[in-house]
Image 1 (cartoon, one colour):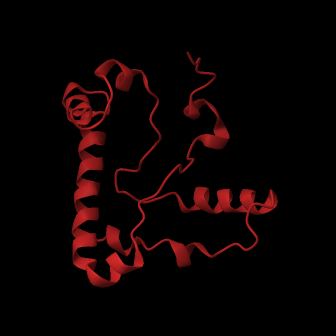
Image 2 (spheres, rainbow, N blue to C red):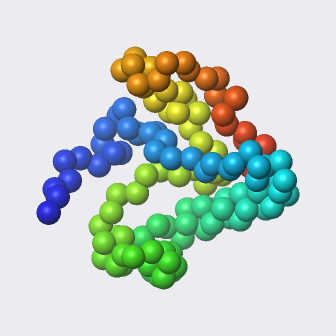
Length: 124
């Protein structure tokens, strides 16, 4: 059984930590760009719904546990990562993580964020 040391919101360095992003393959973008855009629009509508209702509201919890292996109790006890209601990734956080990986010798060459993040899918 684990014990929570601290919530991410309590640790300044993790306040806006971007733990994950949505990744599309180049083939998907090239061959089905309109589908990719529509999927992203639906994802952002879902984010807004969760932000409006509250992640731990009965309505949102019921939807989530219908599609994942979890219980309402576990979901309400969890501390979810921050996801912006407009779907925009925290570019500064991602860039800072890349800097850290480079400092630790885990990557040899850094890339510009505009080469790996295509925010055009967030436009309706």
